Image 1 (cartoon, rainbow, N blue to C red):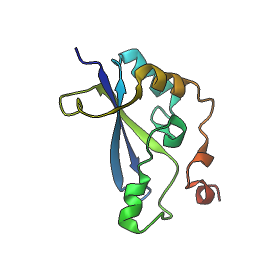
Image 2: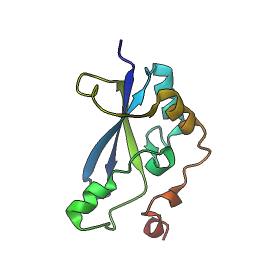
Image 3: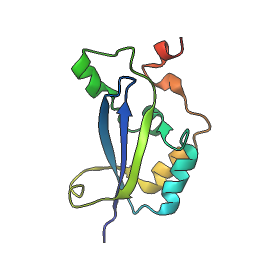
Image 4: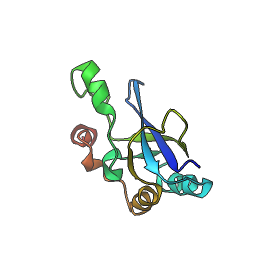
Length: 123
């Protein structure tokens, strides 16, 4: 029985450069879990990675561009919540499904100030 799940997400800057990421969660996801996430994300997909305690992905683009650019912004995008496959089994689980869902549900508003891009996106 597979007791691991995967939360897949990506960061896409305003120039449409994308970086994909995922975190492994201990526990089995359900369709109800996925629906709860969609209800709590802005427009059913956008969230602040720092607020959920998952690695922000924009630094990979910084490595290619020499640092933050005016194309960067604060939002990450939800892609999928699924059961782990064979390729995911050896990954280290960073949290439990229950904790991750609870943390997402506890967000009353997405705090854009947690992102290092807030300073120039607020202008």
